[in-house]
Length: 230
Image 1: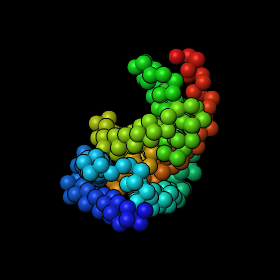
Image 2: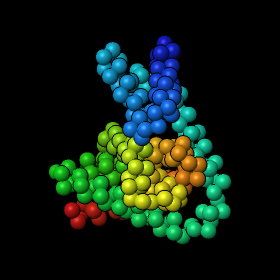
Image 3: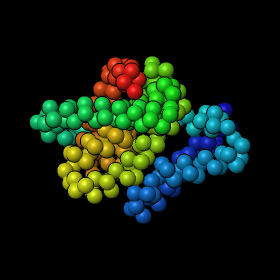
Image 4: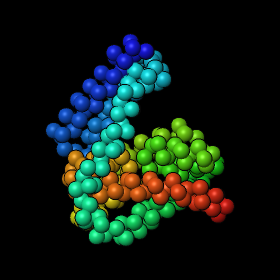
């Protein structure tokens, strides 16, 4: 195991660091450091024949530190606390709508394309952070591996295209932009918002937390109803 740490951990951290430096210089939403890191590491593992389990065991420290990174997103949220307190009813309502739309749209499209109940359950929590999404999937009878892929994909899409879509729609409010991306693209989108603007990042963090809690509380009620309707 220690041998795997010696190459896996530097590979993960070094690749992300290089891609992030490149993304900062290019300032192009398509140049996303997480996406570019995946495009480098996955082909490298396939070419060398190294299993994902071995790679993950060596770089597990990064996975463990992710929990602290998520908690760190609460700092900009604290700085915007007065503005959040003034508009908490509107923000709670927005998050409730976002949660319902995210779950209904994902499951409806999956069923329309011919997916079975297990696949639909795997897609149900696609817009919330991974630990919550995996717990919801297991309770709904889904496939955790598919859920993990969907969550990462949704996060990357939000981080890459979210601001461009909001710009084209003429949405300039920092609170609206942050909540839209945080509600739909969880931690990955929220981290990108923090890089663009700290105020946006604060509202994205709020949406990330609220939508995660609301999805966890309502998924077991909404999914059976959706399956009976569809």
